[in-house]
Length: 412
Ligand code: HSE
Image 1: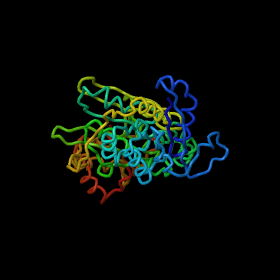
Image 2 (image 1 turned 180 degrees about the vertical axis):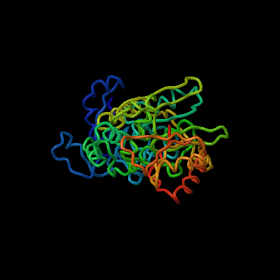
Image 3 (image 1 turned 135 degrees about the horizontal axis):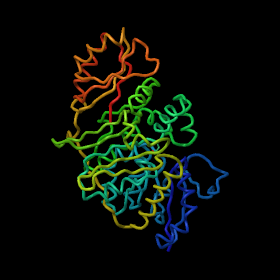
Image 4 (image 1 turned 180 degrees about the horizontal axis):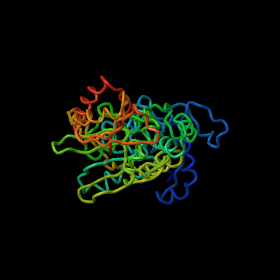
């Protein structure tokens, strides 16, 4: 008996999926206990020189209507065609595995329900953390815990850019170009740079951990495009590095707090040592305590590793839904950003730094003033005590009448 699979999308992840599957085909077949063949690769582009040119197709209906196809890897990305394809495939009882975090974050609850109703599976290990196993650990291995907090570096492109800027003084543009050449960045890298990709990922993890859909459009999200070398220097002197961090946790009053933003991370914190394209996700459970999942968060074969793992799992559970699930939710489950409590680094420019110090302290309370080599007289940087974001914003609005607010970065 032999099983047939198909891949939709022959970009970085799709070609990696095909390459890894063919490379390890014999071992995969032994694991599953039957022969498995890649029957189709769907892409609108032509690849006449590809060794798989004989399997390239352009018509989705060939896959949908082929009863031999059991599992389809959707690695095309986006939430329009991918949504229509995925829905139709699941409704016809074919399992779909994906790296498409946008679709999982937006339509996960609906697609998981369709998969359950049709005794097939919608699997998305590759949607968060590239090659890092994190979906099953949260949903399965840590199921005996109440998840208290998930915090992580969830975007390989931005971590690569920040590492190059901080360690090699490379410019933002150069580092981004290199990340694109390495196949880390999204088709439109704005999604990486502005934190949107990390936002989708933290929403997926939060939805899994708390069982309710967390809408990526409803949580605060800021990226790294406004980080300057001055901020990097202040962070360094004060004992921090700057990282783009996603955090999700539940609060005592039953709300969910979720956010993506650049953070000052203490050099003693494990996440401060996660560099280049690597991602790391800290998951805290009330039984297990702290756990950390680490690995390559983007790139062709690391992401393909997770996609092919899901193909194997889907083939092994042909005809049985393995139970991934979260509820769609219209309720107001999120803690408003104004209610979040943070300590923040602020950098301002004004008249004379020394004269600003006492006025600022009387507004915020006890401030930690920071130094850097060559700090101009008209620049002041400080870290506030932990306080409600609404209070911080109100104070900064008042300050903005007399000084220019150059940066505001939360402390992890
Ligand atoms: N663009 C994403 C990243 C790819 O850089 O992390 C992996 O999801």
